[in-house]
Length: 351
Image (cartoon, rainbow, N blue to C red; front, side, top):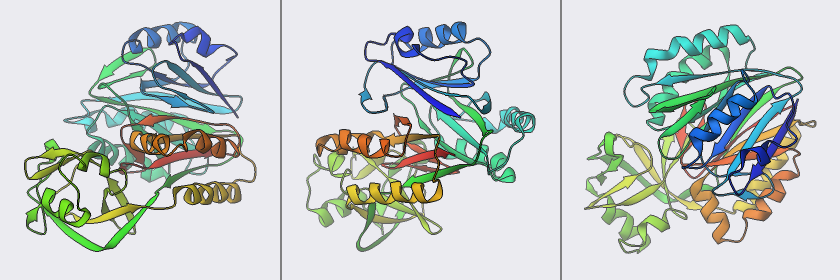
């Protein structure tokens, strides 16, 4: 297979599509004002080609912040795209669509991956989708787009998750997740006073969540939303840690970017040597895949901001380009199988 990346900083879709011929699967990364127009034009240009899209920044060797990007697969994939509606209330109502697409595509965990773009309620959506994927051992990589809109096969939806099932006809696929944080000290908390609908974290070990965070890190209320770049929370998930970003202070509580439930066990995390960790990820991918056709990744908005502030973003893209054809988008939350995480990178590698 081959991966195509085209972009236009001006939002000109024709410019982004220059050089793309006979695509077999397309991902559209648009902007707030042009998603509908880009979706319609893309379907007209390549009618019947499976496609998914969302609002978000994209990248290859540089970043497109407010234009349009196209990531497409050609020469050796089989793909199908679909949608589960009512993501905020009952995505399971539409799970038969995914089941039918899985049945029709065939494939297995060895050569097939699910890529998704979601408008929200990610944890519930991922649990729903992965019940079907798990039976076949198929991995999932994706993320949350902006402004509550996504597209699939020429149509724009609100309150939905769109997915592409991509089968590599020329080799294996594998999903990865990169975490650049580790536990700070031996802090361990039991969450309470949560509100799942508002992503609210009220108390940690019976004390105000805001006050606990301030006391440990010696920060003010105003510093908390940016201090999450260095010190997010982590939720224990078996032998894995799912990162939870802090959005804002809400009274004595903290509002996060993903759900926290009463009795969840949380850790306080700190930023590690992210340059070294990126190199470890690259080395692992090279070891697993001596021959690589493409890498598609999702990087968190907060990672993008952190790397940009540290003057590392361009170097990061150059480092990832050492793997070969690498492209992706900046999400508001990252998906890895049935896990919804923040401040992470997830990717799928095609042999």
